[in-house]
Amino acid sequence: MYQTILLPTDGSDAANSAVGQAYGVAERFGATVHVLYVIDVEQNYSFEASEEELSEAFRDEGETVTEEAARRAPEGVDVVTAIEEGSPHQCILEYADEHGADLITMGTHDRRGLDRFLIGSVTERVLRGADASVLVTRTAAEAGVETAEHAIEVARDVLASEGHEDATVLEEPYEQGGYWIVRTEADHEQFNVHIERSSGDARVARIERR
Image (cartoon, rainbow, N blue to C red; front, side, top):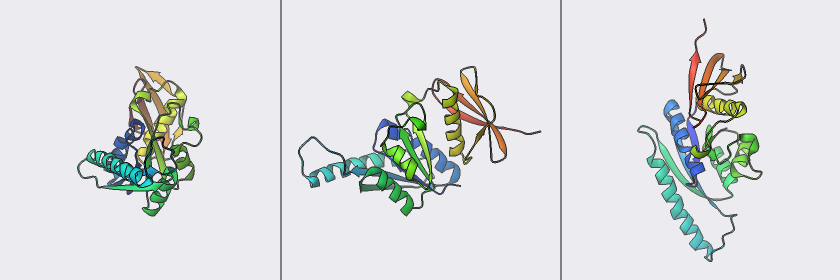
């Protein structure tokens, strides 16, 4: 289903939370992962340096960040690294279009779902402007799932990462033994998504129809 996955990163914890997700999807579908670092030319910096010096410093940082992300790739997954300069969300969207990305994986600090993003954030702008699917992950420190609404969002994200878009929730999620159980249907199949409340870790179980 996915052939080209774009993984924008700036080396932050939020961005790093998306790395494992990107490689997991790439392994499943045999996709190539493009690791992209964007030098933000719109950012105002308080220290004194020439434009050339800043560009060189951030390019060095970008090489370090992209190489570290590339080293995390599982055996058999092809990785391409790239560094661009410009407005982060515009560079991400343009790169995705130019390279035919099927999926963009990004991290966020938000712990309450996609509808709570800060206005103007890079992730929100990519979500609004991308033609490709966008898979958003949360940092481990913020991954706890406290509400049924959040459990539904996590379940849909996990199913989307496995190629099941537009999942329908069949009944209200319920808790059992420290897990949320979310019963869903997608692509004419039914699934129970088990989500650990404390960590947000999830696994999908297909329900066999009789």
